[in-house]
Length: 374
Image (tube, rainbow, N blue to C red; front, top):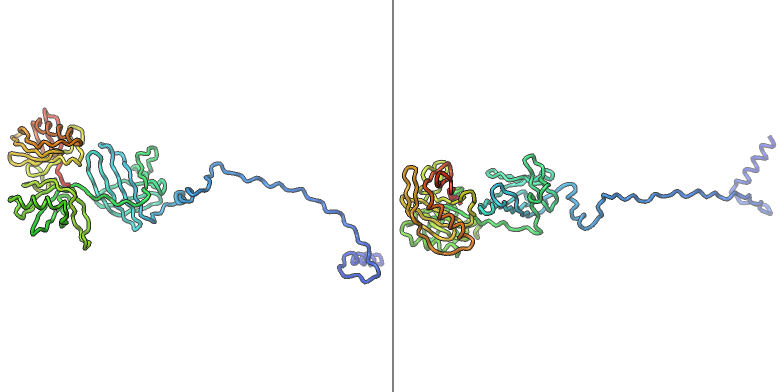
């Protein structure tokens, strides 16, 4: 028991942190030097070979890696492939309020379509919705590029020919297009009814409208009556915001013509026909090669010059006499104009089949014409 008390006392003396009141402090107990532990090596940072270094470009395109947001107005342009023409030029404006506007132009054929509607974005797939026209769908490859999708909805990535690129700034749509319709002038106020849609528009009294007004007023056959006219124009808003037709170029009046009805066409007379193909070659729409057949004569525009001639049609035979024409030279039209006039005078049979007028020579189709509705 004494040994236990002595051991306890020594332990308390060594461990106590209380001050010592004796004459001399006890000797300090020596402690062993601390043993240094070996340093644990820190592994070097592992670098992913596939990681893209951060930069201004990657920060700007951050949305490309996950989702696409149309939170600002955008313009995309490009030329997509066409089955029977050099290509289809596209200009698409996407607006952040859900609307879109598009311009399609079939190159060489010059056929122009202006389409508007609403867009739907399904992840990266863009759908352009219009009740009358079916447009292709696109895939956002990035927020700078659209790629057309195939019939199964997959983006066509094996060729750059199927892509549209975004412009740096929003570009206004070119709304000019060829039009055919009923023009009428009363008390210096003109109206134009489009043959294609039946839409009636007041005509703005601009400088380009004046030649059309004068010619109408000088022709005694018109006398305040509606007459078919062809022109290049655009639909816009006047100072009061009302829809108005602005004429960029007046082409021609077509007396005795009517708006074509593709469901009631049996005769070639009374319709403005636009030459679409010579043999297998499309005629550029921009040349406006057109003609009309009356009872025993025809007249029209061959791309550069006005012409007229007499013709005969009996049963299955058709013959055009020598053409009388103006003699202007147009570098971009003269070659096609020569082919058109030669084939027209060569034809020995004419037939209206469905919505086309076909001219034959030796039972071979040498020219196809369609009703000019724009």
